[in-house]
Amino acid sequence: MQNKLYLNSVFYPANGSEVIFAFNGVLSQDLIVSLGETVRGELSYYCAQPLVKRIFAVFIEMTQNILHYSLEKFVVEDGTSYGIGNIVLLKNKGAYEIISKNLISERQKEHISEKCRLINRMTQEELKQLYIIRRRLKTEEGSKGAGLGLIDIVRKTFTPMEFDFIQLEDGNYYFILKVKLTEN
Image (cartoon, rainbow, N blue to C red; front, side, top):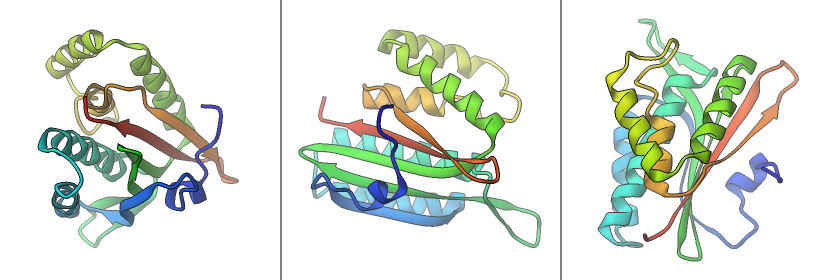
């Protein structure tokens, strides 16, 4: 990606985008369900149901990525941990953008970068085949699922993901993922 998606540009877009929804904080599965319903309800004022469903599905995938893979965690007394991060939904000239940010390690950065580049090069048919294959395989080491999230995001957006990493002084990174959805 040529321009870094700096934090201020995520939550204060200069391009005239309208912020439909923004969240910053701890994500649990129950909260993701609630936020998803809020987003779905809000979107019903803006766009047709088929697009609402696609945006909702991508929003859920991106928030679950934060929940499961954010290095920054909130841990409760029973040992359950919840990911911490940011997600914003923007409307910009008939298109919708979802941007997420969460903390990751250098090891995660290398894995995510490689995976995103590979997925971005694939056609819709190749993505469909990879999705089918992945569903049949065992869960990847260190994964909380079948490794389908990023594949499904690109399948539903019909466009490559934009992604960037901002290195922090401690050697970790902010992972910023941006996708765009339009009526297709």
